[in-house]
Length: 241
Image (cartoon, rainbow, N blue to C red):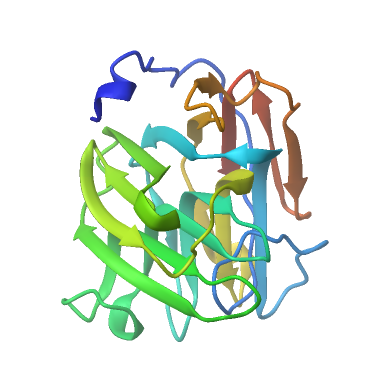
């Protein structure tokens, strides 16, 4: 953990809620679709917070079970958080369960892994980054994206620096998203244990707040059916129904 995170609470286990969403099949940006039609779906269920001065976002959640019955092609399921930057780029980090043959994972297999990805503004490119293969053992872990030098973004996992994004170069972020993403051809083949995800953000002055505080009110973007999700104070909770 970085020094600024020593005050973090563990907010998991309070409320069990239902949620999940699916995302489109290409790069996993955080702009959600309006529905989840069967076949080739890529949709989301995410909690959102809009500001114009994000200099960091933070979240923690359990490494819970989530899987598909078919991982062919680019099908995947994620529990993650995103920081969107001006011009449509983003940095994201979290957990994914996917066939890793097309990403940097050295195993070249279907893997439950920690990852981070980034995309440049104005459709300037998309990059995937593998951190570690892990297991869905229910343990709690910390994820953080913080503004670095020269408009880069530092990515932390459990307090350790695991990456730096110069691709999504920006002085600030404009939206925090946290929640679930799925790309699957068959929606009924999805399984997800509940995820309660605590969210915080850092403003332009370097102050940290719960994501239900500050100058903005959290919103949500949920692709239905068959997924739901909602805020519980500063936590976003989701699960496949």
